[in-house]
Length: 280
Image 1 (spheres, helix red, strand yellow):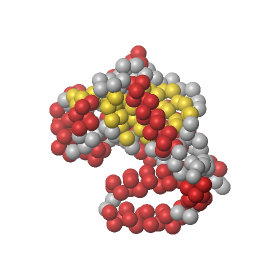
Image 2: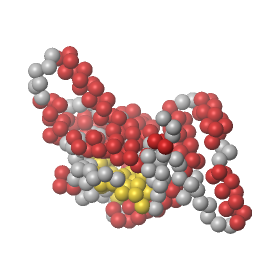
Image 3: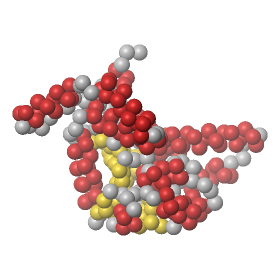
Image 4: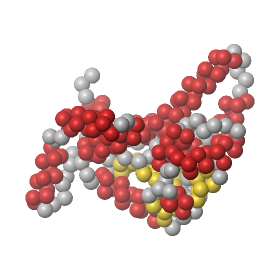
């Protein structure tokens, strides 16, 4: 993994960890973050030994969202560009920022978020792209955008109603109120709540390792089908999985799982191939 300014990346026992690494700034998402996150996700996705991803952070807070200095640059910049072109450029900028988080959703590996302290604004945008969310008892969640006079634009309004009751998502988005860890667990937004970050990361990493122990081909297919099914009808989803199975079902992993069961041992699955190893 490359060296990064705003994040740290490591891989161990099949689990990749992306750690937000600006604790002195409460892990605010700087310009470097928006470049580095998708680059790190792409690198992990092309590292065969990575089979699951944990997103964590340093310091007392997960993230306070987009760096205010960066946000001010959007609002106050006066480049002399004609107004229509300036607004078209802003639209493309928003789409580029969205892609930084979309990369997590598109990644063929499951992504687990481990949240402590505040998860605010852009933090909500990011963790709603994850497959699973966990938090500490002191965690809290805020759709902050409404309090600064803007509409959340990086995925919260599209994804939050899909991971909690629609009415609750709307309440949080309209009011900007704080949702604590207990409420997040009660509504199903997070899978588990832990006493502290150490206990949380231990458990979340254990879940990620259990995922990593399964067939990476089956895990990739499962994520593909869950995401596809979310956005399509049941009939479309069933058709999609039938086509997927026609290509992926008769794999070496299936034979290895059956053999391991007969021999009463844990199966050992090969890594997926690098995309870059395919013929050009």
